[in-house]
Image (cartoon, rainbow, N blue to C red; front, side):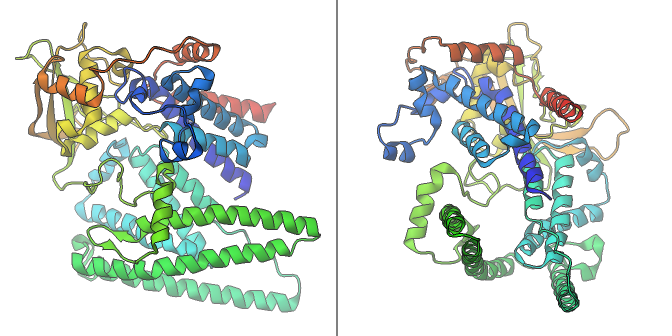
Length: 549
């Protein structure tokens, strides 16, 4: 795959990510949103150290443009959205500078949601579901390492299976841009086609190398198949497929693999740098050698920083601590780069709650359901979200590239107390105080003046086994997560004071400028749609016109 196509794919990911963020921005980080950006310490940095060690965001320079923190964030999102859009339409804008600006903009601001295919998958027999699960584990754990083997056949094999896995996840669950980005990066890892041999001796050598590559490929695949057969107990048949290795043995194997993975990857990384340096020195002309070598050194320094920063999280296993003892300097570099989020913990949703290991309970998916009423004693009416399957008859939605933050928070907050779920608590308060920016993030409540009381129930959801009726889901009540609450309930008001939503005097609003006025006009035109369909339509029209004219 050409470099231009890969850059196009990366720009598409940025376009979807910025679009998803932009349509939710007022309800998320607006002054009356669920996580107001004004609560952060975004004062203008006095020194470079203050900027790096504090919140390293371009928003902190907003005073130079006389913008509020929210307008500065909205401007950055629009800049990134515009750059990614124009880069998709114009190949000349798909360069490094454009991507760096998009990354800076996105960094500065910022299967819980099943798709319809998930229901059809769920209706399959249990042994097929077990086989699907085992296949995904194999794809994600074992096959990923084959990208590092310098054999073309193994790399192509790894790409095909990674593509199939992420394509399946993309159509069965709504994971934002994660699967799209993974597919694009998999294309980037594909090796280029080998040049055809020119002479007979070279042709014989090429044939021998090809035969050796196929032999190694078959040997590696045979070892992998044996490992899968052993780990999942396939000798007992598909219907009893499961992980037969005890947890302590599995952890011991994982520790052993990680113990060798880190030094091997370090040696491969050093070998790659040395190879690139020799290629640069092989360029024609002294000036070309200096330019190529300077580029290699610059990229190598950046790569070393990223590689070293990723070693500490890689060397830690869940519940077992560090597998490889790393030098203290490595941990210091990783800690210094942590505010930039270049390398994160490998646990799913680690930043959401470091004490929660994301896993699906056997009894189904836990989801919080908000209910509103005009009176403390009811009658109660469910407050639905656009993409959370809460009502039993609600069809799962398809939202490729879009990640609804509030919907996701409702799904993930069930395992925590109300006091430890600040976004959920602020969401309840904003609904009770009728903040229109937040109300745009949920379906119409059905209350003319908005509900005066809200309570939250925790349900366990399961997909129905057949579509004999209109219901897609069946659910079971677990508990009352939040009793009937009014905007003036002490529990809620005290929590809002603690979070800084109330009780603090707001800063004087920034005077209107040409930029802030333009941002408000654009927002008035776009509004807060609940999906990216409009963005897709505009993009397709522009690409078609670009091809035709």
